[in-house]
Image (cartoon, rainbow, N blue to C red; front, side, top):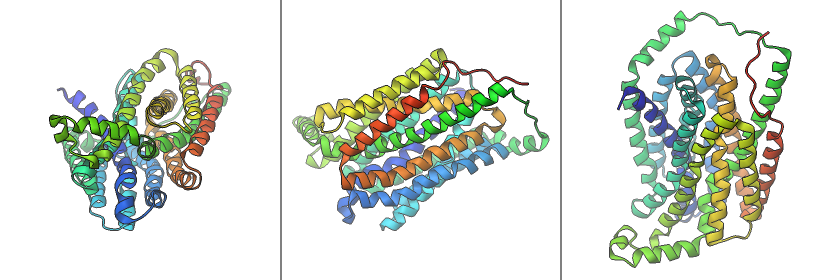
Length: 420
């Protein structure tokens, strides 16, 4: 493997781990801690909220430090820092300690998106496909959080779900540092040697377009964040409630054979099966990003965005009251929309933002996105405790409709920068 491929692979592993770490607690809360600590699912969500706020708020300073110092250096800090924070969370003995651990995971996890995506969008050509490929790895992290955590709950306890990925991340951090040592060491010299840069003035029409474009990006980022957080965080709990008969049937089928019964030895493995269902939905849906990446380079963002928003609107409207097989299929549909949209705003920013400030602009975008993610947790908790998931699906169908209306304002093709 060439150094360039190893570099891209490590960046992809980083995206995988970033989303995995942020969603381990979602499955732990749904399938283990509620019974072990005697707290309701809604009560446990409160301890995750500060971590998601940190995940958003610290994206901006992370992007600023990356532009000022070293993007690769910040990635090393990400790998090692989030790994240590995850290990610490796995060693916690009270809900408050878990909350502190999740906050630290969010703080270090905030580094990846403004920094990693800036590297991917600047270094390689075919931006749409590169961002889409990187996005698939992030989505696989979302999917694997439910599967790995569910399996470890059944076979090692919830603490291992935090500790084992933590050690793996630290190991990758040392590998990344070795691979990019020269680039990190040279960053300080380059920043000193580079004088202030001037930005060409733009035409009035192009400035007007940028204002409209920025408003659309940040509105869709915020609303998409509500949908993404609600679906990815709550899906294990949704499946735990609505796919129990399906899960029991599959566990019975698995345990009927001697070979498969060694893998799933009993009814205690319902958590593993629920995690597997979530993994399948997340993984299949994540593949949509490859199609989205190709379509963005070929057709532009408007048509692709509208198609995905329409798919989400239909699926959220259908989901209330569904259980088992139908619920699984419709959930796959709205997750296709949720994952497919991830690359679109990043693609548009990569086309409109200058490389010099790209990490900071991505930082602002993810401050909006992940602050919304944090604010969505209390929404999920309140709606679930007061009304149930059917009401949440109706709220999300309205959110999908807002995205659809916003995207209709986009031009069919993004214009090239016009300088005065």
